[in-house]
Image (cartoon, rainbow, N blue to C red; front, side):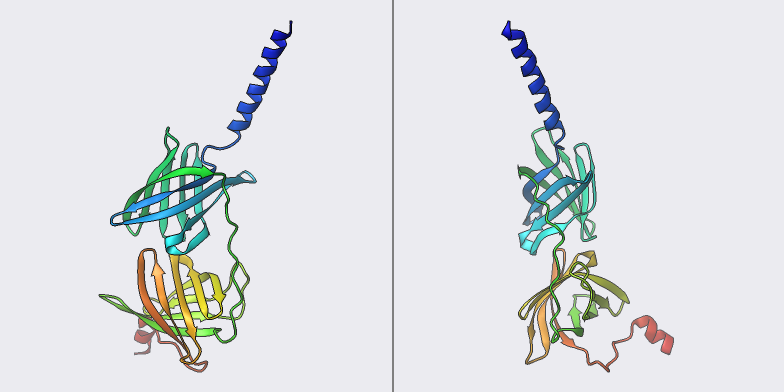
Length: 248
């Protein structure tokens, strides 16, 4: 007489478990693997989760010094996901039947395949907070980037203001008149790290005796040395080519 009840209870419990499992989206979790760039393997960790019925995510790439970088344009449809990073890199992937997240990474017109495996629950990092900018580094700094076919004058503006999530400041490309907002600032003693829109970052060391910051500027896989010097308060920045033409 107890057997029907036992079978019925088993069906109900099994149904409850299945329903609970269905509530966990297939793409939710922490995914780890590598982008197979020709001659280079880029290790990445991607966290994807739903929060308040919206998808959120972050990316960690130790080789680029990225930890918990927020994903932009994150879109999930069934077993397909797309997102961007810093406005330059794009990821598209599909969850295969064997549980592997397979996709394509694109940047600057180039593409490379990647494979990611689910290694655990998602741990999406909240946006990183900027540190205060010390007074001896606040102000405008200028430097020159030498490329094989071009030379660019850059100005790094470090004002006293902004918030921990929007530190203020910008990077100016003089020749093009571009003003690129700063999104994150980190300072530990004389070591600094600045991130800007479009995936650009700058890291360097402040030398008080020579009044310069020596470091490198990066954009994706591209990196060049850049030493910047303070611009005097009464000195004017180099005029852009458009402005120079107007004065002639």
